[in-house]
Image (cartoon, rainbow, N blue to C red; front, side, top):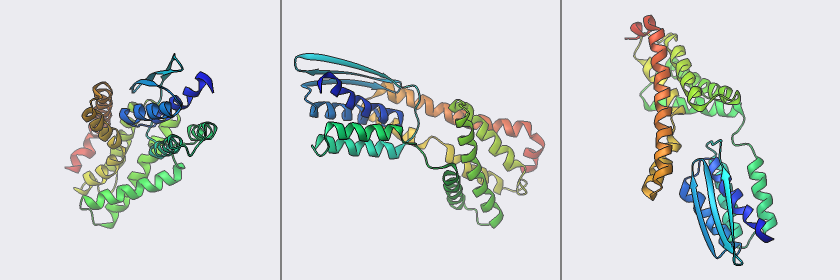
Length: 255
């Protein structure tokens, strides 16, 4: 296999990092797979924007660098890479089989179809609205509609190549604007209808990953991810506030 064999753990780490895995998982996966490939020493440093790894084997040192430009949340792909890694390290997969599996995972789509996501988002918003105490049919229907629209907006702007922060800002703005024009906008239910949809675009997974990384001592990545999370929250709030400011008359009627 030669020195190219260490491309395998680098590919696994790259897929994990691109799909939102915590730094500890990325580094541990690369290290374990490299040791299974015969490395005597493995030094890995991963941050949100890239991976650097050095492998010592056969009295030679091999160094690799991977630049990560785009990241997303793909928990299903992370689970698949973890499975391939475990099977390979246990000897149940050959090098060629593991490489084929990882290439398939890397080429596979991250998410379900837009329709499925919109339906799931609507159901999620409905559940949140019930948790917030909504019981009347009209607010529940509008909350469900808002949730589906949130998913549609995010999908649409993402496919257009918009930056994540601009996407969350515009989505927050549109959801707030629509809610202000709903028939219930003059009642207190409107705030819970809006919140039920906004909860769907909050960066929950990145926030939990941030906590995990900070507790693991990965301060650089943890701090960077925390900054990303805070900026996302600020852009959502800014979008909602902008809608309220522009539609001041409707906003006053709400109160």
